[in-house]
Length: 235
Image (cartoon, rainbow, N blue to C red):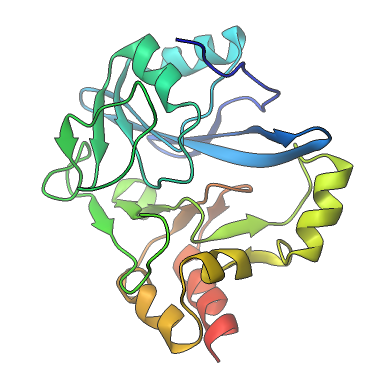
């Protein structure tokens, strides 16, 4: 099986005790590269990978110093291009919600929601959405850390994005810090009060940190920032 190559990425960054992130690159096409972010959670039985991003040999060595990769979590049908590589290299337990479409070479072995690779973690859905399947993951680590894919995005810089991508994504509304992106709302067929309903499970939770599928992590007061981002598109 042929896997996508590793693309430029930052070093592994520790966000909170047991919580790490890596900002990397996704190449959409000629001249179009955007930023994406992988989350790594430490557990009693190895690393849990969410929003997988293939790393360079040096990056993998740094990742593996944190512990063996034993779990791979699929949060969304929209972010899976490097999951086949992780499944092949590490043979982890693969977690996904029922009915989620996975990439070729990836097969779910555990049901996300009825159980979890992190003790005390919760899987939060987005009720009322009807596009791709997507969930968020709330772990108690670091005073509470929410991990999302596309539902929430943190567009505060253009790191790992090409100049063409920065221009086009800005026109599409991918800007302004933490947002519920207009493209996500359109694809998920939720607007106004529908967005409020979709984020009901998220907005009622307390958590200190947020790591989205795009952009840098937010540390401290993340739950209030999420509520403000929701209110911005539902007021």
